[in-house]
Length: 546
Image 1 (cartoon, rainbow, N blue to C red):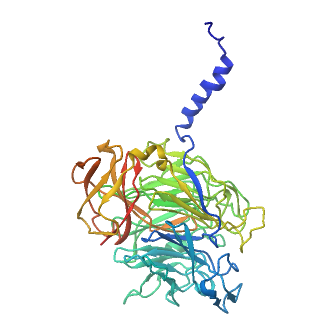
Image 2: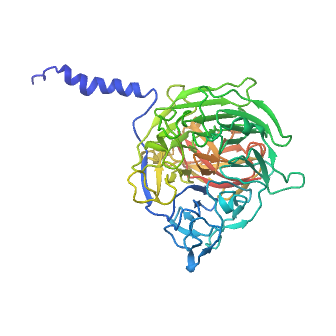
Image 3: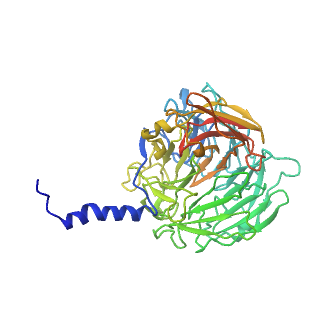
């Protein structure tokens, strides 16, 4: 047989060039992966705020002042509120509970307006939601989940906050209290519940120093509980380490290089990278809008800053994302990687203030070498811009909803109409080809109670029966309250092993790990516990640490 003629142009175009291009992109990207599924086309409202609870149900709400929603209150009930700005009598719901297992929603009742508010889950699993707008800005709302029942609903406490809290941030503290930081024209913090001697609003000059008149750029400050019990607070382009007990600044950090703002309405995002007992805490801040972007649709920032907050002389290490992104959400995945999802390529947060939706999620792998940490994955078909959200589910999927860049519900505009849908992004680790590597947790049982510093014997199975001992990792993830690009109270702990992985039966193994050492590392409450094997996580189980 005669050999085919040598075709250099064909070889260059179809073989050599694609290989070279693939190698180039592997320095920062990988081939697109991940899967999108539409769960519900209409949950009745736009998912402006979301929180996963230990019942595997998600509480979702927006505002009582957008007019009638697309889901009615039960039993013909109506809300009568003379202070409401849109409807004095409203027979529709502005909050729902989404049941992950049944893929269904039921309406919940909100009386006053929780628009652009904050929240956290207490040690007993109760969602406590702080402030809002109009008649709700001084209120606290509590949602205590009821397992196996649909009887639970919101309970409101009028006037529970000293100051108006609109665009503030909440964080759970080691002693079980909540701290509420900042808010529009509020340069202070306060606690809930109130205690004798701590029942005031306390001045925080840092919020004055980082405030830009008119633009502000320090709302929804990024707040993280550090392993020493102090709070890392980032606002605008600066950060401090704050001792809320002594009411003193412990450390001032350098401005993030470039000096561009990262908080609302510039609206970047941030995460506390995975914590280990033996290593210092790191914060990653990504994206946002540069100075001058408000109303001009300037391209979003494509940089991330990473800082070790306990270093004696901390400094920012800068990295470049594959694309600029404003209003992106950052989530810690069970593997310790960071998912960056939602957002826009230009403009800022606010009504009609952004353009160019960024549809492709990016995974950041913090343990990879610099230059090979970012991976771009398959895009969604739905813009998720202003007032969109994303949360991690127990099965490892990411639930995504929202998009309402309008003053009211607007379904007719051709430019980013209000979206009432919920969809799920399945990261690459959920690809069926990894099924034989995926662990299944056998024990402890779901809802198990664990204690600080105690050994936990985690037993799991591997379908293939072929265990890579060195690749087993046990993580604990605190479910977060997410709104306006920031996942409050989000943290992931990598649990230290105190012995080797052992085989206990056919395809069944056990690893002893130690629970976190204190409430500074893991405030008491409910966490999702995962076993990861070769980068593939199990379905999580709920555990409660105290």
